[in-house]
Structure formats: C-alpha cells, structure tokens
Image 1 (tube, helix red, strand yellow):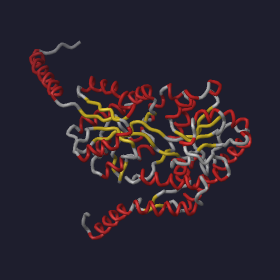
Image 2 (cartoon, one colour):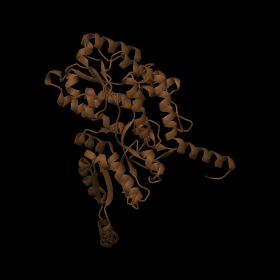
Image 3 (cartoon, one colour):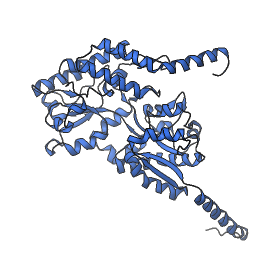
Image 4 (cartoon, helix red, strand yellow):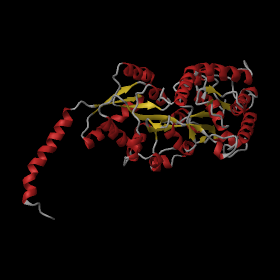
Length: 434
C-alpha cells in the first residue's frame, strides 16, 4: 500500500473542513419538494430515504390522493407554488406543458449515465414527448390486455385467444353458445372509452387530424373499428351495461356471466384475491387481438412519469432524484413494494416479473403500446366518446350518426386550438414569431 506524502497529509485537514462545510451547507438547504400520488406516495418514502443517504440531498415527500391531485397541481401553478419534482399521469403531461410549467429534459437525458431512451418502451416514452421536446421520464407503466377464462375457452375449442379480430369474434361466438342463455362472451362496460379507442388505434385511426385540431372519428378506419365494437352488443356477445350496473365484476366472471374482460395490471391482484380457489388456475391474460395480425395488436400507453417544474430552483437536485428512481434496481424494489410495473425494460429481467405467467401478456403488450392524442383536451374528448359509445351499445343511436355527432362535439372542443395553430401558421408565413 502506498503511503501518503507529508504534503498530502498536510492538506488533509483543509479537505476535511471543505467536506464538512459542504455537508453543513446541504443540511441548511430546504428539502427538495416531491409530490407523489396515491399509494405511490406511501411506498416511495423508503426509496427516497435511500436517495438521501446516497446523495446528502434532503427530500420532503408530499402524498396527494389521486382524487385531489389534478386540482392541487393546477392550484399550485396558479399560486406559483409548484413542487420541484412530481409524479404526473402521462395524459396530463400535455396539459402542464401547455401551461409552460414543465422543464424540457432532452439535454439532461443526453448527458445522463442513468437514463437512456432505449431502456424504455417506445410508446410509453413517446407519451412524454410534446411538440418534439421531452417533458417527463416514465416512472411506472400500464397498458390494457385481455383477461379471460381459460377453462371455458378450452371447452369451446380454443387453447388460447386468437390473434386476429376474425378469430377473436369466432371464439366469442363459441364461448357464448357454450355458456347458454343469459350469458355473454365479453364484458366491455358501455360507459368506458378505452376499448373503442384501442380498436380504433389498431385499425390505424389517428383519432384527430390536421395537427390535432379536428376529429377523425367518422373516417373509415375508426368507423370500421367502431362497427366491430357495436356488433358485440347488437349480436349479444356483450351485455349493454355500464360498470355501475354490474354488482360485482369478479363474482360474475366466476359465474361465467362473461368470459373475457379488457383491463390493466391493477386487476391482476383483484382476480387473484376475489376469484374462488377453484378458479385460481382458470383465468389467463393475453395481448389484445388485432385486425391484421401481430403488428396491429396495439393497446394504450399508460402510467405515470416524473417531471421537473419550471419554477424549481433545485432542478439539478430534482434530476438526481429522477435518475435515482429510474435505476432498474430501484424500479424492481418499487414493483415489489406496490406492484407498479417497471418503466425500464431491464427491470423486467427480475425473476419475480419474468416467471409470472399473467405478466407475460403485459410485457408483450407494452412493446405495442401507443399514446392517445397528446392534447390537453384529450380527457374531455374521451369522456364525450364514451357518451356516444353508450348510446350505440344500448341501441339508442346508429353508428354513423353517433360518430358524426362525436366529430361535431370534438371539433367544437378544439376550436381554440385550431385558432392558435392557424395564427402560428400565418405568423410563420409572414416571417415573425406569433
């Protein structure tokens, strides 16, 4: 072992003093403010304490119920009291970007040793890219797959869910015949927009056109998908009911009132806990079937991202926290704590995720997850879509008139956006910024 020189030993007290001063300075700083929602806000505490020990940066985690999260974020923006870093549902990223409240993260990712775009599912990453700039880093992910009764499907002559719409439809008809009167093949709640949107995206519909300023639900691609969806109710493959009209989803699944259901990872635990032990091995998950084979088997890109607010004076420290929580080992630990699926592909090599047969469908589906239109009006549009979908499911409106009405309503919602885009175009042609 090499001995320290006399000169080095002489400098040691000064070095120790500098380190001590730096540590004192860190302790005198106010803590980094981190807002996390729901269950995630509870379980992230342990990960944050580990970050504090490693970095010396103090963090104050504020847990916010999901039911109050959006209002609190908007209030904090108006009151200029946004946190340094926060968890944000990825359908909210476009809204807070439009408010000019989120920092772009492209340059930080470019120089990061921890965060690389190729480590993430492409569709999930894309939900954070607004107008060409990266505004968030995926923290955990979700998508929708098909839950089904494997035992009933096998009795109907199928070993697994067919990959095409045609085969899927035939399997639904076979299951319905086997089940008998009063039973259905699938439950697709008539007051939810997710399924018709998934089918539309699979058919290649953009949902919105002209720089996301006009609706495209009457176009051929979405109309064909919506007709496929409407046929389930017309041909009694699905009951025309909302989720509020089903007393207990899991009991009805166990009674074989229906054998298929489109849902997300949050239902994995519910199916495991609520189905009787005799059906513990009778349910399965599968990637969504598509109209034209494997490449069309798309689903929704969902989850939450971590963002840095523009007003933060601790943006470098906030980025260090994001990098820490993005490490694959931290993502695995977070999954074990709360069951949220990791955003990092590397984390899926963990044995707990790799051997779970129900998670296998999610792993495949996440590679084929695509975002919905990244406009602040999307949630409002989706709510309107589900109103029209319910009318069609209940037989109160034909498909064509429902889609024409939906287009009219959505075009009105996008009127201001259309005006802003037109103004920007005119300004560009005139040679000056709007």
